Image (cartoon, rainbow, N blue to C red):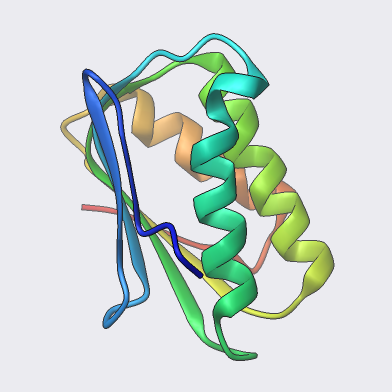
Length: 119
């Protein structure tokens, strides 16, 4: 896997190889699936590179805003990971960022074994 970071004017998505954590930072307001493609490539690449039964951590604690297109992209990734049934997913959210409390918990509807922690 070659992509470890995706940066935009108001956001960063960073992969920490040692902790198997992908951190989402800032504000992501991209408008289309095509604009989300680099982030999806990072997510898919990390997922595919991990050993079976590894835990992949999606850390949203520093993400202030994610629009509906972004939520859709993350949801598609969760569904894809569930179907592959290769790694365990854990999602971290920030209780002080209102949208995360409802939206991140809803990811469990897509994959009931997905772990969500709102800190």
